[in-house]
Length: 512
Image 1 (tube, rainbow, N blue to C red):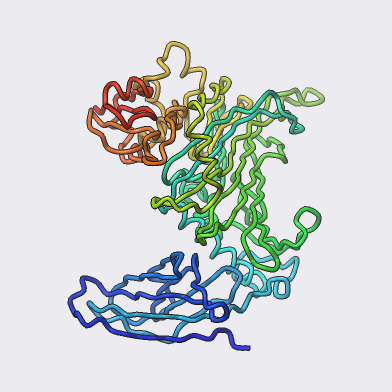
Image 2 (spheres, rainbow, N blue to C red; image 1 turned 45 degrees about the vertical axis):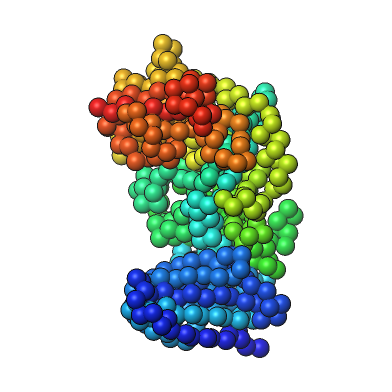
């Protein structure tokens, strides 16, 4: 059977005056004749290096703009064999039309993946390479969707305290976070920072737990510092095939080990489980880790549907025979959430149902979650997998000079709606967003009633020295060392001062 049956139709633009050269085209299933949405299309140069990438829309259409030169067009759908075109030449100022009719020949992972193959080069063996090829494409689509500002999300977030055995201690704190580009999972640290510092950093008073997002898992740094092994699912994972990863030999920093699971028949990305390894001060906490579930929505986009990160709380106990003290886990702090509803800017529902939005819109604004106990640093509402449990007192890990003030130094006399320089003078945050995330995370959570006509009406807005600059994401553009003071205005005060459309509140930034 042929790998693919492809029809190429090349047509050059007659204008000769196009500002940039491009390839415009469409992917069509050769059997059903239906367009193929949510498929990646890339141009690779003569050395096989990817130069530009796009995802097909709901009509299977795509546009690729690139410098003039010789290329091949590659298309890949998860679960199907990839297609690589014959060489094509993209001439300066011209637009090429490219229509491909692709035969749906599936990848039979269950037949090519051999359980137990282990390599520290993910492409080092045929079995590993076949599995990684599918996972890589799915993760790339998750990453792609997370950067697309055209999706409006309604996220339900939660925090909870559980015992060492996992039993709840009191009710969950829950709230809704809504707006465009509300990425559920985003790691603040770069892959290079994780390689250099590890996944858990801190000192004797605060530990920060970092988790992986799609960009981290795809990075060269992650692939360079981990070894991989193929697994077959059993019990709850029956029918799934896993790509297990562990820190490479000789890696002594706090890290993560886990498994990325895909469907054995369709190669669709399913979920990721991970645990922390080599925790600071030799803390033993096998349940510390996280869980991320993925979902492909009808539009073809991939999303993170559910997520949770579990961070240990500990105390110091005496060792037997007067051998000093050691840390012991006394519970866990969990943070996570799930996607309730997603739609495009045009109002097209891609996940969930419209009543979900109506119910949230008609409900009174959700109360902000209760302040975390002393010595706990909560995560950002965007799902940033970063937090700190109550650690045992001890010296900072070797080579880590990072020092963060504890919660006990932040509360008390400080105004909860004002963040002044004396509170964050020792912070290592690089921008205003990180400052708010560290000291006043509740400010980042939407408080306004959702408006179907104006989805941004309930978002927190940002004013820089009295001038509107957008939503909370613009805080990332303001260097922390330029910040003198930050203030939060609730909905009523914000609308009284700045007018209608500020129902989510305002963060005012005053610079030095």
